[in-house]
Length: 211
Length: 365
Image (tube, rainbow over all chains, first blue to last red; front, side, top):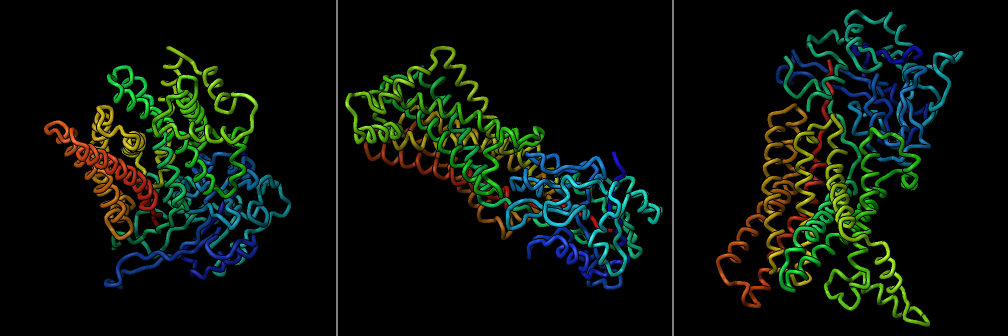
């Protein structure tokens, strides 16, 4: 398998401005409204009553390009594929029947459905537009791979994308350690304001064993 | 210090709405009604004594197979209506290549089952055996063909009905082969019911769709709604006071008791489970699903039909209520009401299973 591509995210540098989400929508000409390949959420911790310990964390999230994507496993037509060449998870809209099975299977809410009823999601900007990227040249073989729009427009430099090996060079030891136990392709820095033992994006494990 | 329920990112539920609930309900009902048809044909009919019991058994068999066809047909249309690209689904033999997906496994089970239930319904409607003997309400497809036949121009007696009767006699197996076909169909019907649950339980991100309890709940509910649909037809045909109806009704009561047991066990699991499991529990007893779940599924769909059935069984066993015409009418109405409630509860169960589903939240640093 070619080198895995992925994202890097540092919540400390994220101000929750949504520039990444809007840039993504613009580049891919995504339908207005509910379709969000990338979304930003602000997650509270603690209680307003105890304001000194109340914190908020901004989380910018898209497809996690999982190592073993649950969406791929349930897709009846094999329209969803984890590419051998760069590890990016793509969707072939010509084969998608729009059943919605992948949407339920994904623990991260990545699969989205446009007005055409077909699945679309982040393709790490392999190409532009819903369903694009399927069959595209590997990021590892492209001369000048397109930088993801979310990374391009991130005001605080909270987001980055590239071969995971390169991203790990800039990651903290803790983030790298978490990534090693992480079934996704996103490296997430721990929030410095938090002392919680639960790792960010440990969500893959947490999310699936909760039931 | 973190407060329970914070540090969590809750994701929206998927877009499976009323069409999928209908599909799951009709899939289970179809499997259950075919199973009822087979049980009536194989177990009850050989032991039936007297014209009334024979009539009730044969009506139950015909209604079961017929409802099996109609339900799986309408259910499939409901599924197609939900799809983003429904026409592509018709190319499933080529397009559905991921045999690890329950949607693919289920499609093949449903397609194969549809062949069996259609053949069974066809054999029970047509053939020279049924000529001049088609008196039960379940013969309405035969009546429709006859009505069309009367309006088609023809030069001899060999009309559409003759053609269908001839084909039915030609392809109908007999003896052990017929029994074998029915048993294979029965296995497939159970497969259809269980598949409607496995489609959900394969998704680990939703604790409500629990792999231990949900398949049994759907199996019981599918068989129960199948019996109710087929026997509702038998009651309409005038078989409400027959032993056949009473036996199937008691079998349905047994299924209801087991189903309630599994639902209670699932509720207990949800109440003591993960945050998403507890959120599901709150939805079931909260504003979202209180009415359809507590009243629709549990009260009117399970407990009240069971109590009605027990009361009617008691009346039949210990009084002579079925001796009078008024009593017969009252009992038949009671059975029809019970079956209607079970069907309503079965549908609402699928509705609640979809709409109260909560995905596991993400834990954020």
